[in-house]
Image 1 (cartoon, one colour):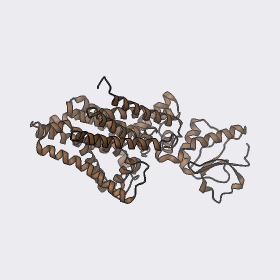
Image 2: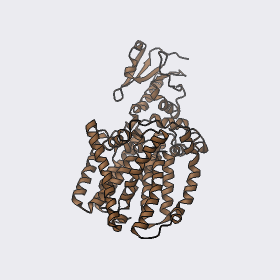
Image 3: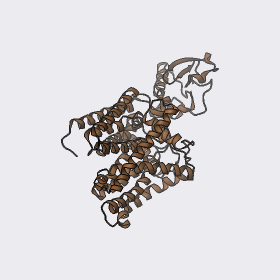
Image 4: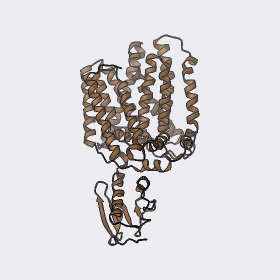
Length: 490
């Protein structure tokens, strides 16, 4: 790595630091969300072996996240920032490898790709949550860097780092099995082509495979039981059923243009453009083969590998659906395709910049500027991605607690009726804030006998409101907290 940083490098560092500080502050003050709370309540306090073996095979249990949650609480307590800290730190890993993947490219291309990778609102949100997604993205870029680097310097340590990072990515999110398996296939294709086609060497399959034997055996031992359980017992039905383009590619486009409404006609146009961008890389690689252009191939190995990675991941998703009946990934389950596509796009820009530097650099920087502008416009320190409905749950619990303290109530067994969506997070704050006077909430809804009710405003239509007074209305999520006028004192 260069010891002397250029002005562009300092700009990359500054932009990365600003995004990191945004994530840190947001993770400190935003309410815990329902999936985070469920993980904390159901997995963080179980044993190491129960977590690592995936004994509770519900897909909410992101193994590595559950383990890190468990030990983060031991070290730093149960605050939001403590439990979210592992994901925040993995954003640093994500940024470092975003830079390292392109450090040999034109500096302005590096800047453009770095900003594209690090300013997607949906992606950034997940690095500030105690879930496995942010962890998996950080380890994904780490594995991809060392995989590509191996073909540049042929050092075994890069293969070791590739396998370690891939294993950690899978333990963070089982979706990463697709990319890991795809990269293993790509390894043999790349090794064969680089030796036989370009270097004119004899290809030895044994020599090619032996560097993987020990890492793969160890990883297979670790992953066997959790992977077996997720495929045999978990229902992988959280996706789409319409089709690969209708679901997964469309959601990739929605992630690329996060928060921008796209009409059906423009969605078709965007799908064509995405497909054309991938095919453009395939055409460039085909020309390298026909021309036997070994210099370009080894200089742009990353383009070859990531182009194949997108194609193989797409085929794997299609075959999984056809053979296993697995749903097509959508929403946050498809978001792992975003860094894969942007890294590929970055390598494509790097190649094209050698042909027409000014046009490519200006285009890349314009896209980066649009991404950064959208990120700033969408910045919200309290609302988290797909869990916006939980953004006021923390404030609501504080209001209930303050009201209980202000009235100097000696009431115990206080009942809070809720919409079922809020159950995990309410119970999380009840436990971590030690509100022993508040009964655990359930998912059975609310009744006129509850001491407090927190739900969506339209659900109170026809409810006997004369028995309650409004404590607070939360306009941002259209919810309301109400309090029973006559409370029974025990």
